[in-house]
Amino acid sequence: MGLRNISERRTRGFLASAAATLTVLAGVTACGSGTAGEERGEPVAAHGEAESTAHPAKGPLDVVMKEKADEGKGFSLRDATDLNRYVSPAHAEKFKVCFEKEKPDLKAVVLFTVRSSETCPPRVGAEGKADATPDIEGMALRKATDRLVLSGYTPRHIHVDATGGTVSKERSWSYKVCEQSPAAGTPFSADVKARLVIAASCHKG
Image (cartoon, rainbow, N blue to C red):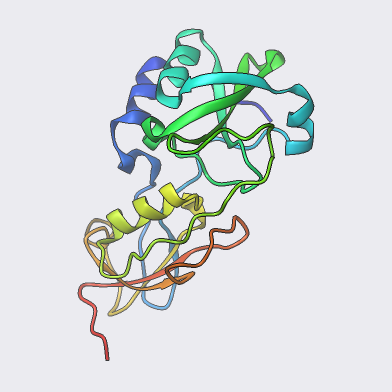
């Protein structure tokens, strides 16, 4: 599976705002589900393979991404730990590179990262500490999904249900999150798909 070359202009677009990570909702319907985003970049190797071929690298992710794009290389972003958290290119300034693995046949590189506040693991796939799922109830959908993505949830796995009838994709972003799953405080797990229930206003009984 190939990695796409990403031009400097496209890289700047990734870094412009958190909204760049999230695909606009195709439409959210009552008792149905849409997706709040789409994953960018695809895993190209299991951690087992990466451990033997990745080498240490350093630098803020946004800087490294631009450097690779200037070199004409494509790139894929991966969690350097075993948590398999989604790495958001739109939040690249909040991450740092720990390892990289060249894919010369694809003229591309895999960048293994952690958040800037974290310490790089001793090797790719080493044990990481899972963050707690944030409390996003009462937040507007756009802000809520942004928080979930930063916590490691893959955008295309964030499902949204709306109450009160069909909601246009434009209006849905300003709707409030009335219920969330997993609950706030639940340790992050890449195996869990987040689900949000939104409405124009939340009424707690």
